[in-house]
Image 1: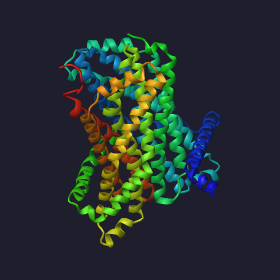
Image 2 (image 1 turned 60 degrees about the vertical axis):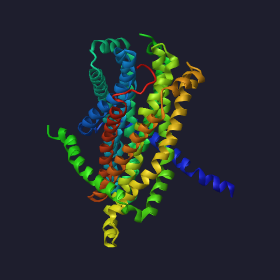
Image 3 (image 1 turned 135 degrees about the vertical axis):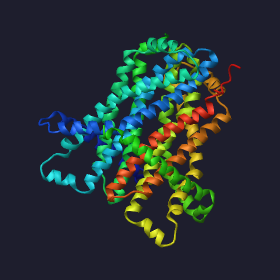
Image 4 (image 1 turned 90 degrees about the horizontal axis):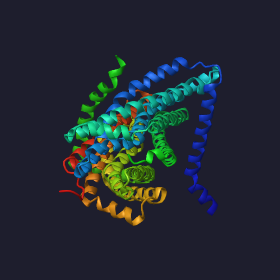
Length: 268
Length: 265
């Protein structure tokens, strides 16, 4: 009796663990299919790359600029102007725009824009039984549909991260100008505090975010079921899981990178 | 050049329609017509609490940990580790919590509403409601907005407790440059009840927009089962941009002219 109640209480957790496991299986299958010949996904890879770029560039630019102007720009500039140290904003933007918000907003935008599109697309194919038809024809859906999306999203997310950093630093410049400050101090502290480690860890982080978003969204799309409501529900769950996974992963990675690289903690 | 300007153009197109739709829904709530279905509103509030509270708080917890971590290392690098509380206070209350709330609401609640109402639209349940003499806009959309206004402020306030705890854990226990007392002294010094109200207003404006956008895309979904998926994806795109713009405008309005810090003249 108690055992039955207990197992019912753990039912959601059990299914969550099951799904995480299945996503891991899909990741391994995707990686294996990507390296094993033949490689029929070249054309689809280019198409997906352009598709994601076309969808994401505008939301990304607006979002990064708005977030960096509001959160680190005006808040930090407000308090730094009380100290009379507005030139220190450059050093602050290394921490915020490059280490943290660049990858974060890129991942949110890619998950929200490209991830949802992938889930809606694959879910629609699943509901119309196109995936089963592909399998009957001897075409592997993982190799032909998931692998190109996985690779394209990894490349696009890493590239968009560079643009997110550029837009973030422009927002920092805008905040300086709003406080009528000359930009020499900003650039001086920016370049003396920025390290190569910051840049490569940011881009590497984003590459992995792209992989996470692609696997989660492909898995949810390929396991959609239940007619009209099913695809919508799949998109809903996919974007929630992708966001939580990305944020959690970023916390782990930045903990490790900040703790193991003393040059990021130096006083400059 | 053709496909590249599609995103901004679509976005501008839908902006006007969503505003008109949103004003109509808000009018239905303000004129009190929604109270005919007050039970349904309470049910929607209950669904929000039981379905979304845990995931919202888990997300907020992760962002709080990240806020504390980045703040602790930044303050170590400028040689003032004891001021980590300043960074956490600003990051948690003023920026981090509204953004975390906006992200996870648009992912969980916004797309959830689109999937639900969109499925009703596709299976012609909305037309059936109209035939039965129940106004679908009031019954489906206005009740959800009222439900969100009932439930979400409380979820937000509990989220504040969670994000504060998370930052405390990562600054004091994970990085450990500053003692508990030293951290809390600075942390409480750099915030005030007014900041809390401002932050709550910011979060609630985001929540209102997200619910309205969800209702709009669900209500106007078309094109069979695939249409629901596409509408859900579109609502997420719109919400992602809207959350950031509201966050920036909120910061400019509330803290742009006056940083509200307990220092200086």
